[in-house]
Length: 139
Image (cartoon, rainbow, N blue to C red):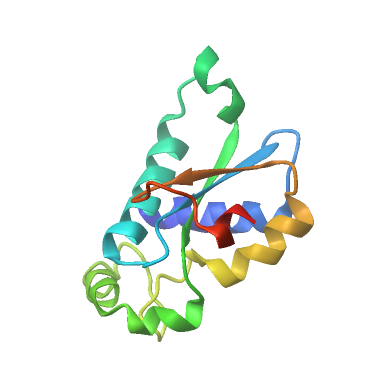
């Protein structure tokens, strides 16, 4: 189920790094914030949180918190009609708020200061639906 993964990611990100979870990986789509960007960020975070592979190549992300993030402000979710329709159809699986956004999906405006204040030096970025990191995410 997606809801526990999103809820847990949101809660744990707000707490900050711990000995058990020393690193966060922000999974984020491109600046357009279209449906495939949002869904691919959720899918990657879900997959990684469920199936982290313990091998030498993945050592840097072992015990990492994978957090899907919509690449726009929460107030702008209402402008993403395709996303509102999709999440409206799966509201039993993933509860949505009055604006149509998944309650437990973090948006860019909700994490920017949090990452800077609590996770500086302990954060990675996983780009989905990207070929280049945007300047706002890189900062």
